[in-house]
Length: 155
Image (cartoon, rainbow, N blue to C red; front, side, top):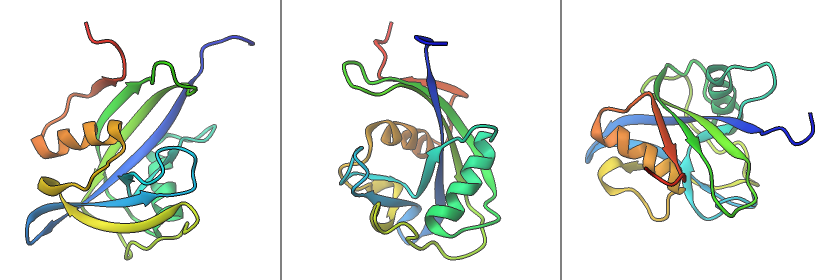
């Protein structure tokens, strides 16, 4: 099916906990990935593999990237996004939050992750991957629409 439009799916997990300065989110500092390096991003995220659901991908990524199992996922939003003028396919992202899991988060892919830290939602680091920062805005607001877009010309 040459020339057919391709949409790449990905799953993201924002781990949340209550800290001294309010609700905190666990973020990783990307490095050596070729995309948004030196930006803070969801502690666990990645492409949905063929035959896998976004929910299953979120669980797999949490285990592969930060060593967590039993992650109790809550759906946040889906995001259709593009980056006009850039060499990326259009994406459909599925964002989840979690407040319960088994294990202690650790960096399991040190070649791709320079740091892993908890940040208060009210004091996020700079820079955060832009579309993820947009999704984190819904976490801060306490509500999210089931479907959002990012990078398209708004009407």
